Image 1 (cartoon, rainbow, N blue to C red):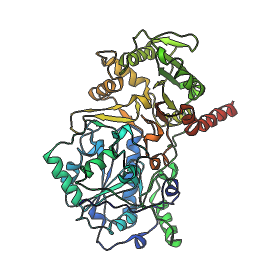
Image 2: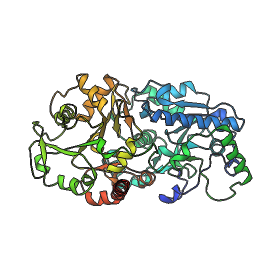
Image 3: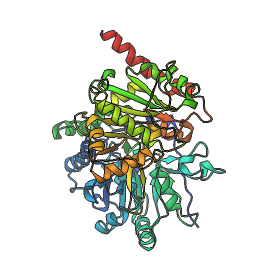
Image 4: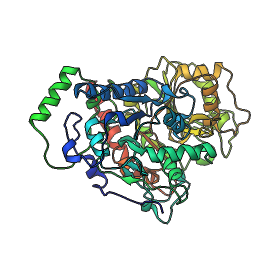
Length: 506
């Protein structure tokens, strides 16, 4: 019988107010009956190659090493996933292809801790927490998420029992015991997972471990937390500065209240002033049948804040206005339309000065200001493709990554130039544009950067616990929602604040 255990935590927003101090020794408050040392744990960071993501992952790796050094512990085993196993185009971010390689290298470890590029860890606290569990037993530990309604991104699984299937919040870190790793690697060796599309890896991983009720349910731990630090808390400290914090924590120990041994930021990363609105060209894909239905929604919501926007359609309509690309409308795919936009962006004299191209659907709901802030972290003079990453065939080792189109596809000018100059083309107008671009990116090694702040679906398609510690950049679809309300609830204030700040500077 599978174990179904949930250690209840404070739900939703309350969880994220819990303080996190990586320098506080909380071992005595967490310690259990089992012997666990640093040498029993391997830290796996689900990193990615493009800048600034790889630098963030290295900061987390250095922070773990610094804590161990200052506490006179051994040097930790910390793995950057994309560097250690297969490179940036291997698909190991989907995790199942990487698990056998991780286990084979670290077979003697008792615990396998996985986290994201912005997940901070209190190393001593984590080790103490693990001592509550036997690594020889089946343990799958994480911060609990569950769907608020049956959702397409999870193939409508568990539609009649949503809260009973929990899956890990990757930002808080998650853990597998050696017993689970051994059994999973054995299973993976016998058969390839039947997963074609990698959409939401945390849910897909939990579903694979659950194994149609013959496997294991995740156990939720309240000590694994997310959204409880500021981005500035990720800045590296010198050994002297860190030691001062350790000494201060010893002098002022926390003796009560909740404990978090992991943390991640809720706010957008801080990389400098937002990219000016004049540098971003928004290309909205639409068609005649949506000129009166979807386009007005864009115009009265986020379109008001885009300094440069063009609606590209299959028919010119001066009342909007739209630009006729000369490409017939298709019910799906839209590859011909997207590549015609690329051609316009590169060759139309009116558009040649823009460093950034943002391609959206006419039912994409996006925050212009948050996109401008996010883009300040990237170098527009280098090839950059940014958005929500999906994968096709990656779990089977034969596929590629792509930026899913509904949440918005962001390109630097050199990236568009690389796509076109390498001869990437559609075979048909209704080819899936995002997947064609993904295949091209892999073939010609064009960097593709994932941001979980872009969303291919509606807010209701994501766990409330996940969105509560995010600062989303986009959502997608008008189906069964009021798009004006979605924009007002999630993005309006941020866009108005940046617009007002820009006016104040004039």
